[in-house]
Length: 73
Image 1: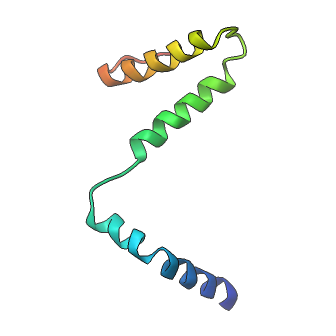
Image 2 (image 1 turned 120 degrees about the vertical axis):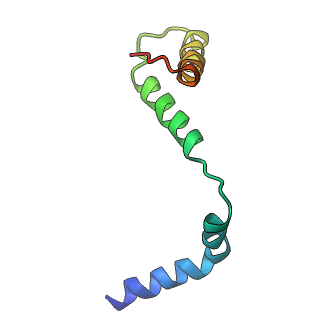
């Protein structure tokens, strides 16, 4: 209804510069968001890791292998 529309208009006004900049500049944080998501998934599955350095190594290996096109399960 009208209240939702007015809230959407207000949100656009509050973020107008940022929204317009997203069309002007070719920058995106999608790559980093993908890394963050992958890390969170690994964290959920990392109950078997007893040491943080092993978990960190798995994250870094996964990121590095992604760069060269190797898939880790």
